[in-house]
Image 1: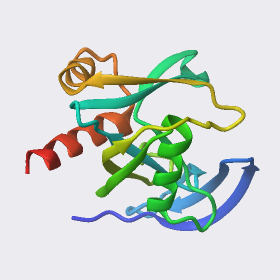
Image 2: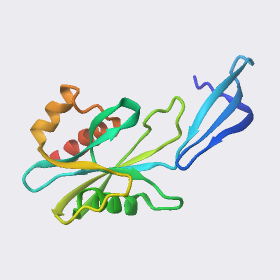
Image 3: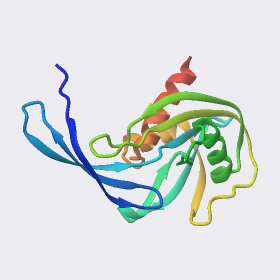
Length: 178
């Protein structure tokens, strides 16, 4: 059975540089009313970049919500109207300095569907050519080349716990198996 929540009203309560927050009142399947706090996000792209030496490029970046460094695949936010493939190519270059001969679409994920409408698209980049990284002014990160086997173990040991990274690595490794 499919349960549907019908929107009765919607009020924007915050509009920031990246996100908007709104409060929706919904009618539940039994007729009762409930509030839903929803975050609107323009979406993003993550890139699993695999070198010819069977390494995955990770970035280590401080993340304020957790007050610590997080290991992630290179990724970034979509600009309004931007094609997600073009965003991925741009973000890979900005964060790592790499260009890829092959840029394969692996699918998309919902990072936190209980309250967030963000869709994150995932790409596999291979045939990499290194160059100079040029991150955004407010972006400070370390670029790491980590053997695939070690990345798998980092996921299993919960040293990599970023959703798009776990999702992307799983999809990429299955794709590469053929």
